[in-house]
Amino acid sequence: MKKGFALTFSTLLFAGFAATSHAQVAPNGSVDPGHPRVNQVDSRERDQDSRIAQGQRSGELTNRETRHLDRRENSIQRNKARDMRADGGHLTRHDQRQLNRRQNRVSRSIYSKKHNGRVR
Image 1 (cartoon, rainbow, N blue to C red):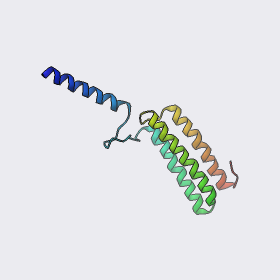
Image 2 (cartoon, rainbow, N blue to C red):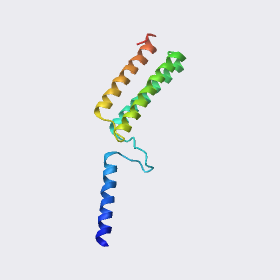
Image 3 (tube, rainbow, N blue to C red):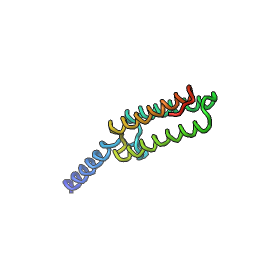
Image 4 (cartoon, one colour):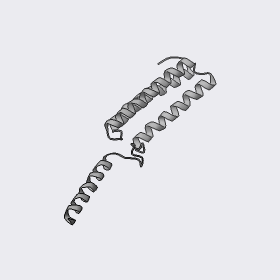
């Protein structure tokens, strides 16, 4: 009886460790976005959203330009969420590089539209 309990307990303990060691799981069971790569991508997202909002407030961006930039930013966020689901709650280096490239393009578009009125 004791051997059966110990074996069952150790099996459950190992299974729980294996499940949580591959992904960071928050107390409520959702994926924890605390991974450094996720934080970096999210930080850039917030910064770029702030730049877009500031451009709209100052009149440097039209409503149409703002909607277009917001759609591009939302697409990046959806892609990030899809990548995280595929990799157990993390972003791989490849995923992060790909997201950064897209964010760089949007960043250049924000700058260009705010300063030159040109579309890139």
